[in-house]
Image (tube, rainbow, N blue to C red):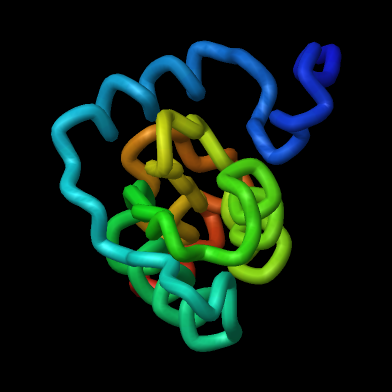
Length: 122
């Protein structure tokens, strides 16, 4: 997959059916994490990581007082929280990280299915 045309959108994951599905699913979500005047701190990254562990797909609202622009903030969220960025729309970022045991958007690979069944004792 080619990189996005705009260098400002480097944080975005490549266009794919998965990205389209994530954008559709994220449309009705409310922001769970907010980035304020301190920017992307370790506390914000930790909060995003916890939210991704619980929900797999999370909206992040970037406050107007944030020190970096929205594209740089999205890059920092991707780097610090290990998230994929599905969309940057205005000052809202849609972040995604596949759930390790119960993914909603990507199927488990056969090896992951085998490990999951071993852990559950089947």
